Every structure is written in C-alpha cells, then in structure tokens.
Length: 137
Image 1 (tube, rainbow, N blue to C red):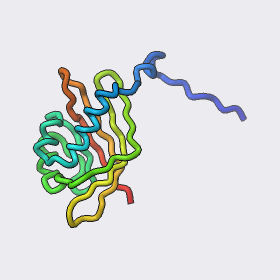
Image 2 (cartoon, helix red, strand yellow):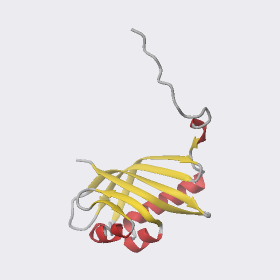
Image 3 (cartoon, rainbow, N blue to C red):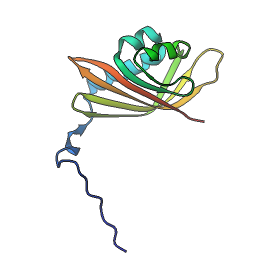
Image 4 (tube, helix red, strand yellow):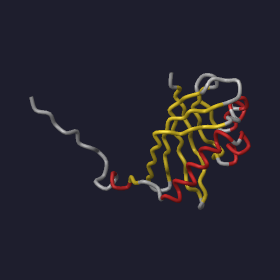
C-alpha cells in the first residue's frame, strides 16, 4: 500500500504568510483578552468590532453584534482568569489567540473552557472580531 501526501490547493507562498505576532503585539493582545474576562462588559464592548461573532456555551449560543451584549450581561465580571496552553498565530492584520481558560467568579464553580479569539489590526488598534468557548468537563 502506498500512502500519498495530500496536495494543497493553496498558492506556494500562502503557508509562508503564517507567523507569530511580535512580542509587543502578543503582550497587548493577551492583556486585552484577560481584561475581556475580568473588566466587565463595557471594556469587552470597547475592544470588540461592531458586528463581531461570539459562540458561547448554551445559553446563549451564537451571537452577533448587539446580541452579544444582551446575551453576556450575566456572564461577565469574572474575578480572575488563568490562561494556559497559550498559542498565537498571525496572517497579515489578523491574529488568533487560543488557550485553556480557568475563570473564577464568587459563589460559582471554576469555569474551564478551550477558547479562541480572533483580532484584527484596524488602523493601528486591535479589535476582537470573534470569540468562541468550548467548556471542558
């Protein structure tokens, strides 16, 4: 039996465009992501694009634009969050952060999830365009 290597339909240079953000941008983005969890919905809204998409465990589900802020009212204000297994990747003006979150809120069990956020560098400032959480049991 012969195994073949799948051929990519991407241009030869597409893979070379994937890189890691600068250490300065990584620090900025990870700080923004931590504040997304701990600084309340006003901060999260200020750093999120107008028509961003968030996928949050049921409820509330798949949310876009203003739906996000109605759906997250009770889900913000974590006392602390630890982000482990951090990964970053960049392609042009887009950066994806992925990590394992352990978030703490008074009178609730520790919430653990695998998360990913996508950021766009828009006119010299970073904006979150998507966020997704998958709970870890």
